[in-house]
View (cartoon, rainbow, N blue to C red):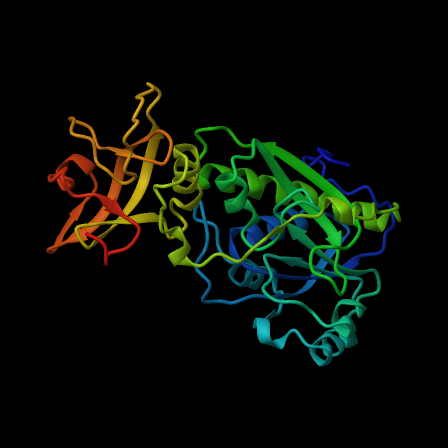
Length: 332
């Protein structure tokens, strides 16, 4: 199932029935808009409603939210909090609801809601389930140094991210890929698995149960979790910088009480044997190198607002090498 492909140029629709399949799409971010654009091209697919936040802003490559995309197609738009059994019953009075698809949806649905569509409710998750269940799996994959990840189309059940799998698609994570690079790969896999998964459901293929013994989990991340710990190995620090770079809030540290976002960095390849190592120390050279628990990080691009001035070049901001990069502004 991993790495499955579909023919998108021909609409990727392998269901030969003349009957239109009525679908509701619920979702956020560019992920949902990618899926919407793929589904409207399927000749037997009829999107009868979308649930979306019209004020939601997380979009890439000038993509619009599904609330914007739905309007020219005369598709009703509902706010997320209206996803209730009563609303689904109202919608289904006009058209029988065959299936519902969640994309980057927040929160769990009650069984009365996810079991209401005739064929079921499905979700797309940005990992190769059962690995990396939970929140921010893409970011955690980069932080943990994974060389591959993917997306999974699965049935929604009472337990989050644990339903049987209908389709998966994998992609490579290169050592120098930043979050924006990986996110583009994620979006492409969402497009592929949305079509492959729906076709598998319509053709009554047998889904694959998840192996609970192989399940791993990801804790929810907050912006403050981007605080760098230079006691860690340089590879972990570097991966954290990559994982949290824009469009995410960014990895950061404090320098003389000022918050510094580190947007781009690399690992110093030459080995220096520091038998006396104080993590966070800035080395006295022309470039901005900082000691980690093991190895040295080269800081290449920053974002700092200090005294009314914005800094992006590390060499212009880190002028006093006697100061250290710390884990909190309370340290000096």
